Image 1 (tube, rainbow, N blue to C red):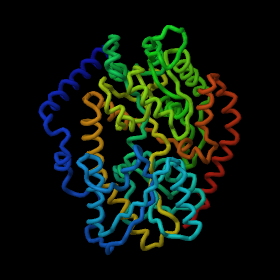
Image 2: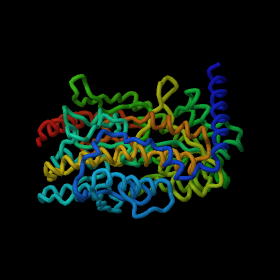
Image 3: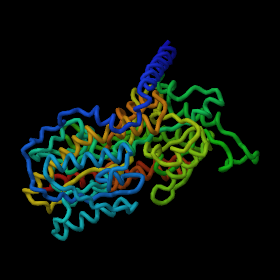
Image 4: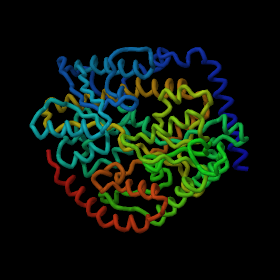
Length: 491
């Protein structure tokens, strides 16, 4: 009965969405239409009386093409929804506060570069940078060195607002201090979410129900995906050997794609205890069982597994192969839908969350790749500028929620990149399912525990019990050291 009700519900959603789409077809990519629906009032409580006399706000940022290049600033209007929304957001921020946003953009693919640049400036006593917009994992590593100021008590910065990511705040607030924040202000908090894409044409050809049905019925699990992958596989060249000439059920990698299973299968590394301290909580037995399922999915079904290539090149391999129709499903990050090869696909595609551990798991889980952007204020910023930056962050975040998020989420993702109304509902589910784990975000400090799982999956042998038993002692030691460093940080 549950299955039939879920399918009927999906069909009802689809019918309703199609009617709405038909009614709005002429305007669905009209960026001005999106702007007209913005709330007229500001979302924040920053007073209109603030006037900073045209002060420059220098924002050092990682502007990697195809990833984060348009998060902080864009050079001009170009009639693209997201580009123009970012441009207009900055004009609004500058007008409200009488400041000038100065984006100092670095296109180096290495996420450490801009963070180390900010760190070195602080060590040299320089105040040339007012804000850093950098990759989460590297910013958190540098926080422990005392590079950044505590932003939790700034007069105009209200981190409790919905346009700041509350799960991130809950995890990163230590004691009464917090040194970085993220949310609507950073497009990568959406773009870097792990998802499963599927080729609807291949599902139609094989007469297999779209993955939406499995998701709705809580049947979308690793075992379900492994069975599908095996069923879809075809040895196209007849050599009884899996190679790139074949057709695969799933395209993935043993590298970054593996990270997604920590959240998808609900395997936390670190949680806060009743005293607000970080605690190692890894269930090694469960992780071992999850790994068995991953290995079966990758090597005992019909899956094409790309291995590590520098600067996340394996993610490009997955996307390109999927866009060429070489597989029925793919594990990737949401940002893939923005790339030209996916946008040029003739086959329609759908999108769902990553599969769960088993049917008993209550919720789907979404991991953001740990290079999503967070904002921090360098230690060398003086007190008067510090308060201005609190207002700047708050207004940038609220105006991002009011202008940029609708342009990206409603116009670009839902209207431009995806033609499937049920996929839009899946997007909502994906973002509602994001899980933040200090053990993953502080990975560079804690001995890169996710790297162990990548290596195990790449080796094709489940050594989780022995590897993570060795890791536990050093991990706990590093965790205590990290907390001591956080305790010692002073203004």
